[in-house]
Amino acid sequence: MSAASRERVRALIITLLILICFVGAWHIASTPTGGTVKVDEEYAKLVGAAAATGQKSAFPGPLEVARKIGSHLANPFYDNGPNDKGLGIQLAYSIARVAAGFGLAALVAVPLGFVIGMSKTLYAALDPFIQILKPISPLAWMPLALFTLKDSSISAIFVIFVCSIWPMLINTAFGVASVRREWLDVSRTLEVGPLRKAFLVILPAAAPTIMTGMRISIGIAWLVIVAAEMLVGGTGIGYFVWNEWNNLSITNILTAILMIGLVGMLLDAGFARLQRVVTYRD
Image (cartoon, rainbow, N blue to C red):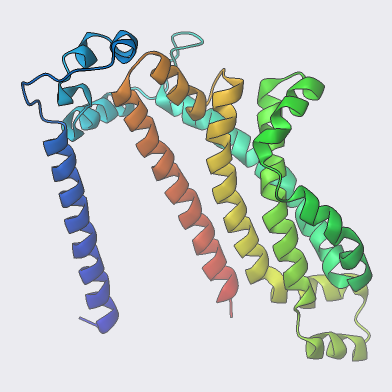
């Protein structure tokens, strides 16, 4: 076994040990104690009789959550009305919104980043606007989006567009501006046209940095869509979490949180693989 393989095996063993410790602590913490504690009256009214007893078992254990995940996976695409849709449908709505907003942001950010990166004057002229708009929370745009677009789903896509555009725009401009001067001088000596230079010289050199911006953007987009859907309601995994809180179903909330994390991990892993392909394409 090679050194790299041994390192991966050791990392896997540590990961499994951490997971076992976490699940064990969770199981112990959620095990009923049989005792009662004094509970705030208003909280007791909110969460019902289970909380009024003060039992720790009011918080679901890992086995209960695992069974709930199994039931969701058994029928992920059922549709029993506006407030009762399968977890697969909710995730599909969220992923579709993220894909639409992220795709639109890429169509704007990458070409604009190219132009900004190739012109120091334009970079200096637009930098103040970028620095002002970039720190604004994407959710701050939601009221304006709802007011102007009149559609909650399109408004959520717009919010994803806003939060996705800045990392891609900045990284693309930085990557283009950082292309080695020698390569540009060679292309100028060979009288390579602007379009060919952009695609054959600048794009391959800036691609790893562009992919880094895309990877950052997709992570932010997936994070923001959950909060956006909590605000606009209707469909999506964010709305599912908020609706299950209204139903006081902590088990479903934990299930959704695990699914959110899993999808986020898969999205990041996909872009990380693309980044490696682009970086080590030679």
